Every structure is written in structure tokens, then in C-alpha cells.
Length: 141
Ligand code: FES
Image 1 (tube, rainbow, N blue to C red):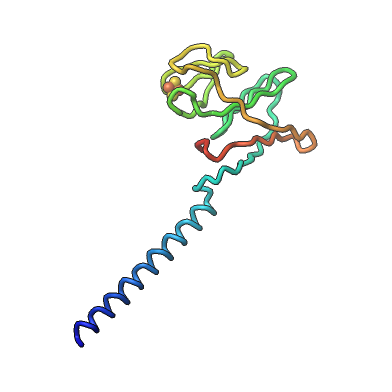
Image 2: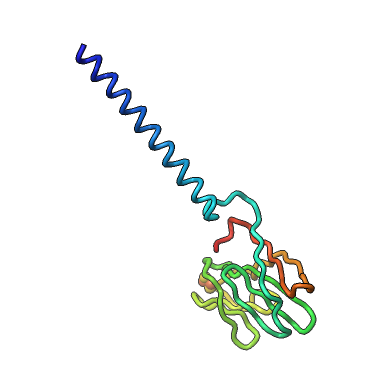
């Protein structure tokens, strides 16, 4: 009789523990989704101001290059080992980690990277003077 009581208590404890763990996982998953931490292959769109002509702007996930008459937008993630590119020197975009250099059209000028910057799709909203840049959620922030 006592053994049966222990077994039912164990079963009750196991069930309660499983319910707590399941609820905790659900809560963590919900919070992570709200925080944008879980990629769902949906695109994220970021909005940034249109730069003046002949300027380069560096953002967390994008580089915007404004020429005299055209705009280019690239991922700021270096194609070598993934450092965030955040500077330019004399019309070259330079990775701070190992010194890869890229032209203003994103072409590789000097390694160790083996290819150029990844272009990102974007649209221009001249009414509001902004660019809307589409980022894949698998791209790092
Ligand atoms: S990560 Fe950019 S050059 Fe290595």
C-alpha cells in the first residue's frame, strides 16, 4: 500500500515536472520569438535615411553607398569570416578584422575574402527620404 502511494507520488511529481519544463520551454520560445531571436525565414525590413550623394553609411547589418546618381546596398557581414564591416578608406570599404578591401560596387579588391560583398534588395521611398532594406533573418545582426 505504501509502495503504491510512493509510485503515485512519483508519477505526480514526474507529471508536474514535465508540465513545468514544457511550460518553461513554451514561455522561452514565445519570448525569443518576440525578441526576434528565432529565425523563421521571414525577411526583416530596416528603414534608414537616404544618404547624400557620395557618402557611405554603415549600419549594423547593411552598408549603403550613395554615388552621384545611384545607390548600392550591401550586407555589412564580411564574406571572409563574418566580421562586421564598419569603415571606408579612400573609396574602399575595409573589413576591420583581416583587412579585406572592397570597391564601392562591392567587388573584392584585396583578400583574404574570396568574393565581394553581398548585395541586399532595397527600395527607395523618396517621399519619406528613406531606404527600405530587406534582410534575411539568417543574416547576423
Ligand atoms: S572577416 Fe573580414 S577580412 Fe576576415
